[in-house]
Amino acid sequence: MLSKSPIQETALTSRIRVADISHRYGDRLALNQLSFDVRPAEIFGLLGPNGGGKTTLFRLLSTLLPLQFGTANIAGLDLASQAQQIRTLIGVTFQSPSLDGKLTVQENLKHQAHLYGISGAPMRERIENALQHLGLTDRKHDLAESLSGGLKRRVEIAKGLLHSPQVLLLDEPSTGLDPGARHDLWKYLKQLQHKEGVTILITTHLMEEAEHCDRLGILHQGELVALGTPDELRASVGGDCLTIHSDHLEQLSDQISATFGVTPQLVNHSLRLEHSRGHELLKELIDAFPEQVTSVSLGKPTLEDVFIHETGHQFWQAEETT
Amino acid sequence: MNQPASLPAAGPAKLFLLPIMTLAQREVVRFLRQRTRVIGALVQPILFWILFGAGLRGSFKPPEWAASSMTYQEYFFPGVAVMILMFTAIFSTISIIEDRKEGFLQGVLVSPVPRISIVLGKLLGGTILAVLQAVLFIFLGPLLKIVGLAPDFETGITLAGFLPLVLFLFLLGFSLTALGYLIAWPMESTQGFHAIMSVFLMPMWLLSGSFFPAGESGWLSWIIRANPLTYGVTGLRRILAPEAGLPSAPGNPSMSVCLSVTTVVCIIYVAIAVWMTLQRSTRNAR
Image: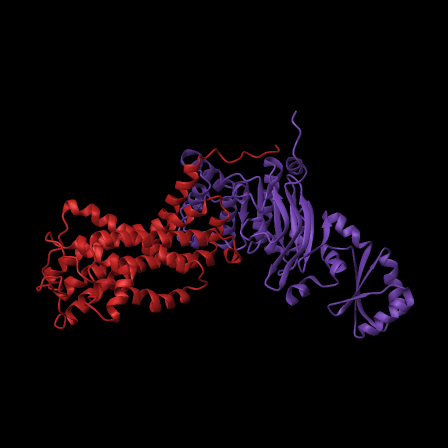
């Protein structure tokens, strides 16, 4: 057997490899030295508030933007020098539908197939399949502009899958989908992952969507602040989370650190505490400061807690300020 | 299964030609589904032809190289055909801006289509529409004489002359569409395109010998001679001229000069358009 080149070796362990990628828009640093791997047949999520750099990374990986700093490869191909080969291997689904509204669903898919060199009988077969899988068969003669947001997205996904890509890139796939449609979408993505071995990278700002991913990278202000499975990430927070509301937050914060030796974080007009034995602390806290505490809640850490833990910002707050 | 069924083997010709045809076809289908565009690009020039023809009939003096019996409407005829080419070319390239906004262009840019095919597909689609409308005008326009809205004149178009006419219209249409493409490609809004149209494209057309003759001397005649579109208008005028033909004269270059200039300019426009499209830039990701 011939020995494998380093690049082939990489392709076996990772389908997408991002190494030290930075990106600037003028003076603004949109991505700061990002590195991660996406393994074959994995659903990898990039979670972060809008403006965190997800879309920039998405555009780099989908070959729309030129790579400025760092390297990346997809299926063992170099993003900077082999973009043309990469394009045949990836399927891309944009946040804003890339459909031509003046064409029917079927016509949109036909043009898409032609762009990938597929025509004739194989094309018709693929289109029929895609329409059937995504429940679009009875809408195929409708103009794309007449479809609802959810249906448009389904056509968009059908478009991205028509050429059987090895890697599927989805930018905010659930935007504008109702819960039912969202559920169907995820069922379909899992099916692609398990039956076809497709590697999927999605960007999202929705916590519940991030839960579906095998592994997650949390992006904040262009930096990867956490990386792991949803369970690993939650475990990293450690124990329970207490959220305390009070009319005198700063005073209470000082008192808590003096009494219990833990320093709460001030997040969005409340105090936040991570503690391995949250239920005990909760009791002691109320006993110690019955007047100051107006309300307190105790919970297992969520992905949102992971985000706050890593960045010190409330998720939605970060979205507003960036 | 580790490896999904990958793309069927497609020859380079298939990856090159198929996208051109499909993008061109899309242009034509889209156009035909938007009736107002058909009306805008065809009816306005015909109205111009009738109204200016009637209004300027009295004050028009035929240029020296033309027959003294030439009416203004007859002189203006090739100019209107070029205007139709230009309007259609422009309207179909404005859609680049819309495609970018609506996201369709992103979908094309992430596909493995060679960038030159993207350009050629767009230009071919625009050109087919432009030529169809210009031919329609050239054959139907003179029939307006039946209702008294056009003078009685001969276009000199015979069955044998039809192919050269279409080929020349195609060359000129392709050139104008390419010009529209390289204006539209960097634009962010259609309003910007309209501004360029009124300060650049309309004057270019007005100063191409289509609206009034170049004259013998003076700054205006020099501008007209320097304008590449003049050679397109004159080339068309020669093809449309009755059998006797037109003499070569200042402001009325010979057919071979017209063909050469139009071809060279077309190649330059297309080359710039392809070069622009090859750049992977921030603009592509809007």
